[in-house]
Amino acid sequence: MIALLGASAIFLSASQAVINGPRDAFKTCLKEASSKAATDKVTADGYAAYVRNACGAQVGAFKGAVVRFDMGNKMSRNASDQDADQMIGDFVDSALENYKYRTGANAATKEAEAAKPALAPTTPQPIPASQPQPPK
Image (spheres, one colour):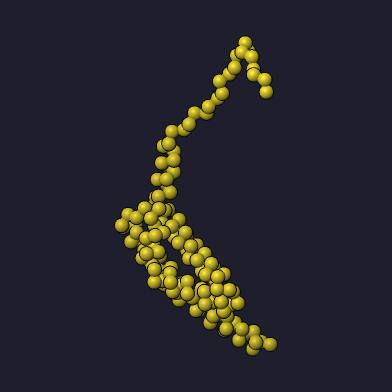
């Protein structure tokens, strides 16, 4: 029984190792691309495209590893592709939020919204009592 548990643990850690290498390479590339984006003064709106372009090879390797892992766990090809795209999107979104924080893009957006003139509330014109209301 203990041998079966040990073998299961070894198998699971080995199957996770298939994803760890590409994931770590993708995360490293995200960090490097984020630093380079800050020096190139990339806007927050263009950040995702910049990172996906800079880390294209790592994105492909990570997606392939996730799809293989998911399909090995009896997921369909379509579900595996969606899962991989969702994981990649989560990594990029997280890196974008970090990038906005480090570059002050969130503060600039809030300042721009605060600088917009507030619209005065419109109130309907009162109808004098001497004017008859049209029938409804």
